[in-house]
Image 1 (cartoon, one colour):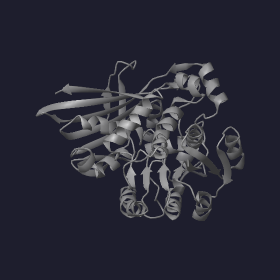
Image 2: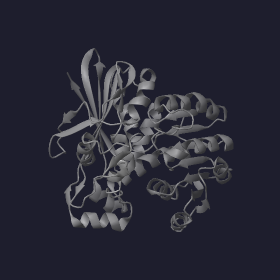
Image 3: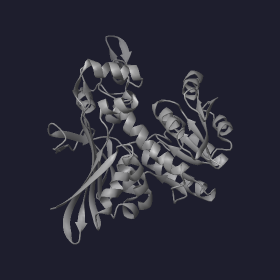
Image 4: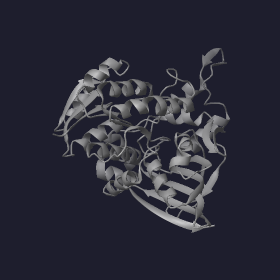
Length: 412
């Protein structure tokens, strides 16, 4: 009998997963659930194995009702509902996957400290899923997610590891004002706070837009600058450095591109502050005022088509893992480059943006592993904790979607 899967949230990520699940021979039924019945009905209408449900994700009981009897819950909801979805998976004894970065999942609920919240997930939910004989995989988009699996590939080349850099540069720039191809509120929120890094064996805060690195790659037009950016990877990998990353002492996430160039001057001017202030007798929140003037990320086919037809200034980007350490007694650097379709290519293939492609397809590969019984583990893991056979299967299937890796080793 085939698998039964509940997809929570039918936005860009959830709908991508549902459509790909519809093609999987091991899937018998897909339950598409959201608070928006119109969005659910539109998605179900183009699928062959799906039925729709209305779910109030603020109510764990509502999720449990939708999830009864499913093999897997795929959570593509906003961070706010992460704990409810996890609790529902435990209650119905289902496997669990979420796309959202774990940051903020427990903010205001279990622990306001992000790092402690992630530790809590490992400590409290790991045993619950293990006891049920199930697996929860957290943080399964492109970053975190795809890049975490690529980091495992890079570090595998080393005997011991000292430093890891995750580097992402988003160089898609259109003639239309479009600074972000993913959630502007999430992007600007991440950019307006200190980042996380793992330095000398400790998780520490680093200054927003600080500690820049510059890189030149043969597939980019110019040298690019990438800076500190609040992201999950250094926290995940720092907590798992000894077991999964060969004792790495320093781990950084570096981000650059059009969105950074737009946001950094705003940050320097104080316009990403979330504190109320008075201006000309009016109380405003600078962050909210700026956000009100930033267009949302395009997600519909006609929107993306119009932007492409108006003209692109550049259609580039990179996702690179650098791992420094020793191999056979020699100091070396390993570079693992992730290649994926750009904007025009992604649109030609699937009618979506490159951000939607790499996040949705990269995330779906984790789902594919569930429905094809390719996970060896039980409990709760973040996406940096795949075993090597799991990593190899992941990238074998990624290559079928033209998401490929190239790993180079340099003696230092």
